[in-house]
Image 1: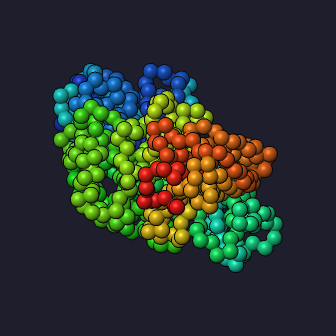
Image 2: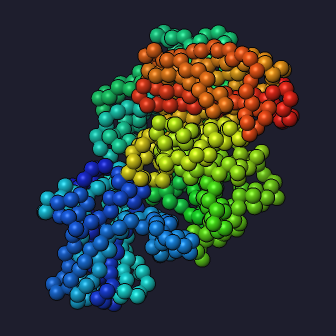
Image 3: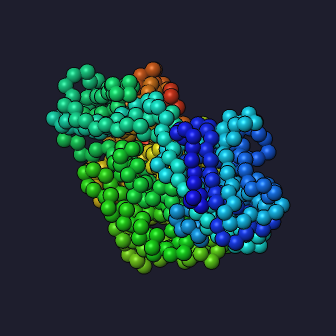
Length: 638
């Protein structure tokens, strides 16, 4: 008999309550009184962050029981082990948790965030050959069952370790996997290119999704060039045609409609969609490897470009060269111009922490295939391989290296301290992730509680010239997952849209670097903005302080538009109702002298926020306006 066997009397369906069993056969020396058996599985991908097993309420959810040999008394306790020790009073206590001891034994096969069921021997002892039968979701006392992960997977791992007495080290007994299947399909997600030329066929892909966003079926097809049933989308240089593709998948009995498709003669830029903020098994991103992360992004989320930003503390554990090579190899292997673009990177997670300073997470990206890796994090103690403390030290190391790199401030979780803004290299700021929005204090779905002075708009008001991006910040290895369930919130992902000349790493990089970007809550909203002819994200200089600012915008939504807001220097300058339409086009003139930012004399900004009736949002990158008297800037269009 195997040491560990996980079985289920019926298929486990993602996101449901169910019952399954883990049978354990003891090996080796006895487990003495005070010793314990521990079963752990990855909590990322759970439908509830706190849905670990409990043994107190037989009628409650997540009730677990254990049958053992006659004469042995067992006590059960369920809990969560996180990569940081919550409630720790000192940094020394915070940076090492039980999760690291599991990783000592299992490497990256063990998540840094675990649900654990601890079975303590309180009377007698367990001998070799004794059998424990653990029932997760024991319904005999009225419990509705145990929470099954919201993320379908073919190999949900359960590991079993022993402590043979209360002072013994953790040792591995064995492990097993069980399949988590997707539920029945409930909606159809249809994706088409956002910009096509009139004579081009339209490649369309659709994914049938279950209730919690797991793919059930994928189909790709080519449609002929649009000829009928198009509508007009007004632009300053004249109207363009707009199309949407409606798809019926008879096999699953669902109908869906694509994102808006703009039909443009010889387009200078095309619109590409990506997710540049997510984690894998190497840090705290669930079970998915970097290869599986990119597979999901390309084939399930139907993205054009993607970046893994594993936390530096995960990459740095034990052997950073080995794990950084895994990240880079995956980026290199999946990067294919014209099909799918990858960008190497990592998340600078704990810069300043060793000195007791917390000034926000920052994502770092590289143009090259083989950049170096450095870690700011002390997490994991002796395993950590920390190379620096502060972000300025990291920038100096990268400048000595000499390659191209870019920083994106990660305000939508750990609020950014704009006093530690890195000019020149910080090109974008994340205004939304599944944690919530961080555009401004009045955002309707905040990553709360927001901190005054640390939102994205606070950075703009200080004259930090950045554009906007959004991402999922997936912690289950699923970029742009249709429902991110790793913290039990089930919120929609973020997406970054870029205006690029082609689908290649250099072209996507150029768009990101030059801020030709906008952010959404996952909807593929089509958005154009111009200010005196300059695209979103650009810098212009007025010829006179009172030169008219001519603003034009065109938006085609994925649902009726509630309103479109024009934000200027931290206030809403104008709003236009959507009028139940999915398309809005506006031309607006802002006359009179332009107000300067109090903390950045000679500078101002404008950006657009689109609100849909279904809760969808898009934020254009700000267009930056310099007064004639302001200092020269390399990015300014005169």
